[in-house]
Length: 262
Image (cartoon, rainbow, N blue to C red; front, side, top):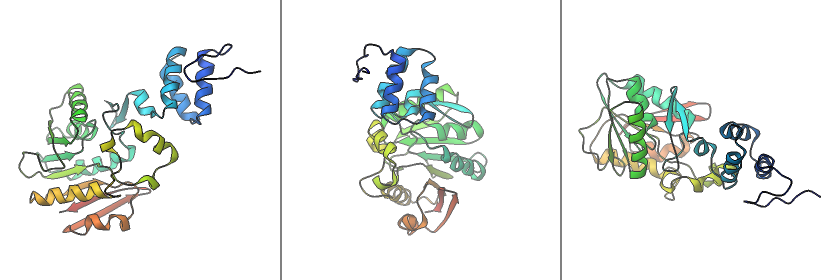
């Protein structure tokens, strides 16, 4: 008879490696994620078991790993921030192309700071200001900026309401969007691990996008505003662009972003 596996208990006859793998398979962790967890453990079976236990409670691999890569750079992340989406790189590339020489760029909802830091590293001529409503995320972003040796002005703000700067040349944001129906079972399992304010809003699928546009308009700014919109189609984005002077909706497969003139 095989030994019964209980969480937190090493069953007789099972080493920690076998027990960890059994836990991961029981909770239907993908082979790709298991391979990464094995790599993170680096042959340390006790560490592997700890990682498997954290995974059992829904912790995303990015938090287990402790970093993500963008533009060839490593950015530390943890539960203080949302896990950035790989496809948001296209939004950053668009801002890099469009931002004027020596221009001022304001990022809203900076999280771990990867976007602002990448912009500054790729375009040292730019003045970068990054804000977030969450002071814990800002601490993480500041640490990442220091790690990469760039100067960025960080501030706490509700959208752009509390940012004390002249009108920027560009506003860029990757704020929450979507709703429960848009998430896979695994994503719904992982959501409790993330900051509640960094995931989809109870005000509706595009609530934060609407809030940001209104905030920019209330400042009287006419800055081109770049918004990551992911899988949202034009119909769902209509409320966001309805009050804007002009907009461009760019889609590349399942990914999309908006460029609006408020």
